[in-house]
Length: 234
Image (cartoon, rainbow, N blue to C red; front, side, top):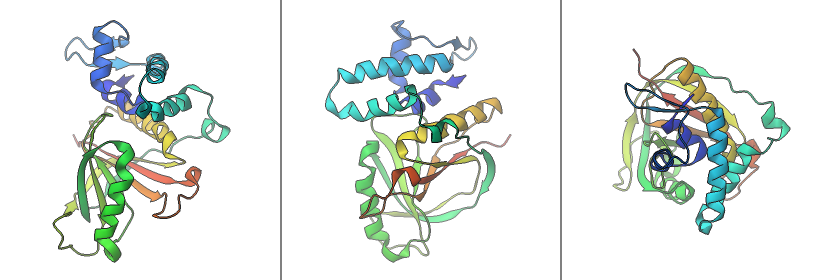
């Protein structure tokens, strides 16, 4: 079973839209906790949501076309390489790291613009792979994100914030492949989190171990992304 925030992240639908579908009896979750009123969705709900979302997108404006492809990836039989793919889930102690950060509120597809701006400021002071911190639990139209580059020393530039990303205990996995199939890794992580009843903290992190360069895109099927979900120690 998946929480509404997790379904939002997997499908690309906002929590507001999912609540609306529930209230209008278009799509009701499989289970609702009577004590806290939390909505829970199962695998069948996920498929239904994705099919309905595709039909909605097809009748919407062109800016949502990118979501159709993501939904189609989930509903259609996956290529052999992804069908057989399983994710190694690990519990790790993530060390603190000094970064130059750029906090933004914008759509996901505009991240590249800010990455370029951040690297121009950091220049040769970079000391690690690009990190994106997500402060929203679910998928939203205007996301609250912080792009971070590990640095050797602080930078005297007011356009970025030099800070220490704190040490965290986290559930982690690594995804090899293009960003359009990144949701498969999130699905595996959410399943692990739910089974082990872990309380995930914000922000989550994506570390781009191998991705597109500033000039050449490279082979998207060989991108490597590490996903970090900090959790609360009890």
